[in-house]
Length: 162
Image (tube, rainbow, N blue to C red; front, side):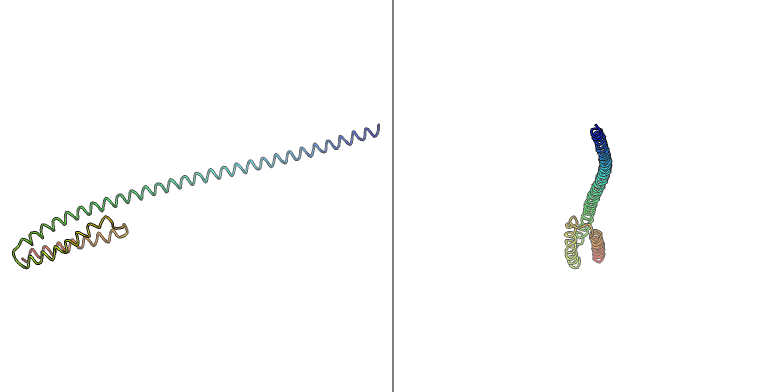
């Protein structure tokens, strides 16, 4: 009987110890699961934050692209307006050249022929305005303006001389 009591006590102690170990390991698993859940939540928050930032960057890039497209459209329209104004100025030069060419003096006819060649070169340059790259636009415009002014002065001088 004593032996039986000792066996029962030993069994109870062993069973209690096993249950206690199981409780501690279960608690450890719960702590690990909780820690993993917190880590997963942090990862999800960071991923959401990164996705929002990426979306904002895409919106910024899209806005910048729209702004660039608008600027390019504005430049193209400005070039077209400039070309149209230059063609009108060219037409006024043509009237003066025709007047100079209509004169009977040989000097007037020679001057008209020489100036008409320069006028034709300027007209050819006007035809290439639409294809000029943005970086050179100001230089091209300045060159055309100077050539127009010079040609206009020379035609006026030739009209006054003859």
